[in-house]
Image (cartoon, rainbow, N blue to C red):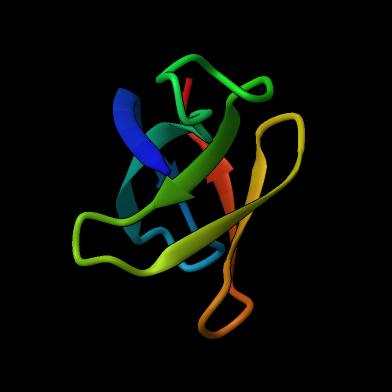
Length: 72
């Protein structure tokens, strides 16, 4: 599986802390090197913590469940 950074944005928690979030697209490749399925979008903090996309501009830190809102 190959992950490519395709974007980044900032998100804020309820206490006003701001988190930089990186957006990746991961593709699974066939033996011949072609894409086996559509890419999967994943999100992580620069320190490696996973971020779950809830809906729209809402996200959640997987480690502790803190909800984040994307800053436009």
